[in-house]
Length: 306
Image (tube, rainbow, N blue to C red; front, top):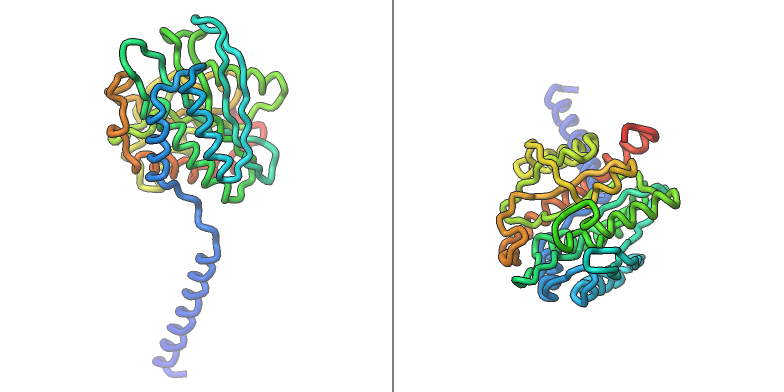
């Protein structure tokens, strides 16, 4: 065969191989991605309710909205009521748990809180602090419901994250303390937990929480870098006590994603205009991208470092 014919034959072979690879890629399921605009619409509807303080009618309406959106997507969801002893007496609160079955019974939790802090001196609607995490979790549950996975995923909306007055060990984290204690008592603690809070800020800057489990944080930061979002996930350390704390105390690996560089925090200015659909999509996509790596780590480290 002449040199020209060899080159031509190789070109044909390469073309066939390229077409076959592209066809194979087309048949592979694309990883789910988050629709930030949809998540932002959920924030808008939650904010329209007004203050959503734990144990209040606004909190009940927010919970009903979350449950309704999940059921419309065909997702199994349970409202778990409990009574919390607070500085204002015993209050009825409720966590919301959506269950997305996997091939294995072990559980990975994605969580956030849906309540807003009680303020009597001004109207606090908590677009970012309470609204952003609650809304993103609805969109994450909807996306994950359509994707196969190894581990069972629970998507959890905690009630009563906010202190009734001043943050203390007794006056805060009511919902997460209740669920962690219940799961520890019944021997059903999850294998890992990712907590999201205040992740809708237009100027998104998430620092490494020093309480979080290092290997879990490393996986999330690696996903951010892989997706080109590294500028939003900073390596500066910052300790933040949040709803992951009761699970860490129970021995569950947990990581917090929070942007605490947010001037409107706990002010009347924490409104919808401070948020960005892109920021919600960035955080959601990082979590979705990280889940397979988290599953792999848990499978290869069945008794690994906590």
